[in-house]
Amino acid sequence: MKSAIKTLSIIGLTFLSLTGMAQNKLFSAEELINKKDPAWPLVKKWVDSAKNKVETLPLDTAKAKEVLYNTQISTYSTLGSVIYNTGGIMVDNGWIRILGSGSERLPRSVSEWNKGKTIKEYGDNLPYLLIADDAVGGFFAINYGGLGPDIKNVYYLEPNSLTWQPLGAGYGEFLVFCFDSDLSKFYKGLRWSTWNQFIANLDGSKTYSFRPYLWEEGTDIEKCTRKLVGIEEMYKFNIMKSKELKAAGETKKEEPKNEQQ
Image (cartoon, rainbow, N blue to C red; front, side):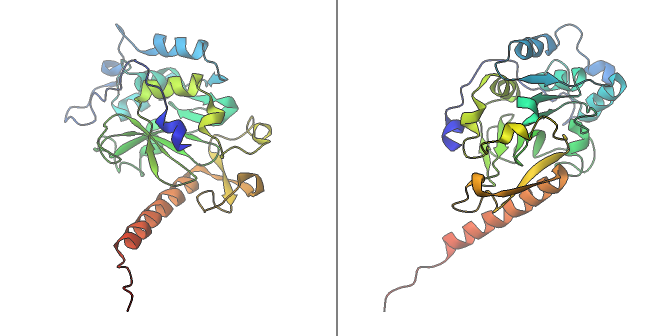
């Protein structure tokens, strides 16, 4: 997993632009819809030529405008274009769920999903923005200072370590990574042998939970029991446990070594 993260290739593309999030003025949805140079034709090209199975979910135009307004993201950016043009994107039959404006199969929008987690109210400054997740309880987020110094790069909360790992890529690069990379390599150790038999009809609001926990030392996913849980429940648990593990690790480092008498 970590070696795959380190070797993630960087591909030049349009970077994410939060046009109004940190400003006093809130732009209307119409102002955020870039009609001269939207990013969607580029994203659509990536979707159409994807090596992995990619499905764009249907959207409600009125809802898409609402999400665009709540996030204050222009369709000039790749994220804004995904919000405005899709209800979300499923990769590898839904193994990875990329959030858009919400759809029946993926009933979570970017704005709704982040409210109460990374922000209290729309328009608040945020430490990171949750933009995707997967079938094993991993979460992807754009960093806005809360995860590291590399602002606007995507991080992955690994379910097998519960640490935020930098992918060294922006949002557009993240899309290309999902569409074209060898995901079996990225998810080595996190996919059981028959995983593809359980994913096609997986509800976008659910994810798998494992026992023993994937972050416990020596865990073999092939020997784990698994059950479906709500993605909201999984996120809250993983964040809580991540903080506990980090605190325990820092405490262990600070413990003085026993001196021999």
